[in-house]
Length: 454
Image 1 (tube, rainbow, N blue to C red):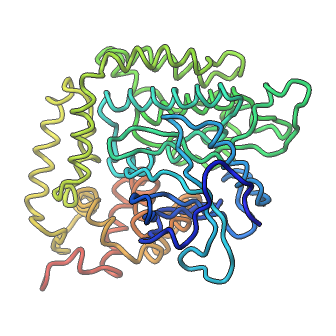
Image 2 (image 1 turned 90 degrees about the vertical axis):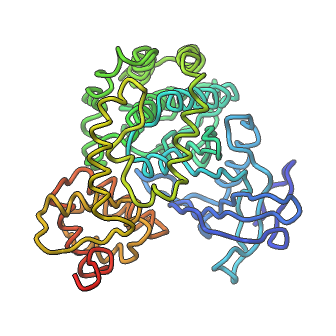
Image 3 (image 1 turned 180 degrees about the vertical axis):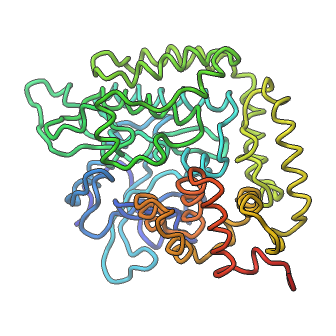
């Protein structure tokens, strides 16, 4: 079955080369490929054969027309802050030579997503960059709502970044015409879009019909994630979130509140964040109102954006970043914090000097604290080097929460699996879990933890 005729062209296998898998999910798979005629890379989102998963909260089988809807929504919402669609795909991607596949050809965002950036840095972004991301997401959502569309799945993995760390909204698999704009022609649906941590309290009711207020709440939680550099409720399962969010629970703001008086504009953004996640859908500010706040806050820090982007990009690309855990120990923040971070820097340098150019250390006379420090200090290298991730995860047993285990298992690459372990298990499990992980490495990757002859 072919996609409906669109203003953009049909792209086939003869036009594509250098295929590379870059991600997967319940919906299907995303590839990077070079378009031979255009001369640049594109992203190709391919549906699982026949159906796709609607969301992580309530799995559904969705007819192929959902992909057609996504293509149409992308065309309707095309702007600077929304991912651009170049065409539709029809062909046989790598690994499938038996049946014709269909997909969407989109612009390729070289820095991945906000989620992957957070996982790489393991800490908050520099304030200018955090404020720009908050503003750019608000700009994209304002445009989307102006077209009477709702996103329905606003979260870090759907905020994509180009090489300059500018943001564009992606994944319109859940987008739909806003029911508040349909007047008498309202469509009833049992489908609840969005990942459960970003869903408003009213959305957990079976009779809920998504409206724009859904996105406004999700934006509030997303703002918290941008400011803190991590996912909310790291250890909470879906059932607990469903229970507690309608009771008024929200992400903890203690650390953010400590910084409000030190960072110009942060107090205004935090106030907006809390208004967005208000329990009443009618009291959440529109994105047009949100824009007034985000634009004002970003303008206070706009002069620092080039330095912030350069700092983050340099750390991501530097060879030294493969042998240190700079982000997990030293959050990227404003100059006001640099003095307090100097002590952490010195400790990290001392720790790293004992490892030299290798992640290897002697396994003799190591305490649990030493093992945990090794796991922290060599995060980037271990993410790159550990290949037996599922075997390691199995050996950790009950130390890995079932939800985290499912997330690890769902990732397509070993590096992505390891990132989930670090962010969902090691960060919250503390010394005991990290030490246990170190011990499993001796069984599956002894070369990573033992010096030759050690």
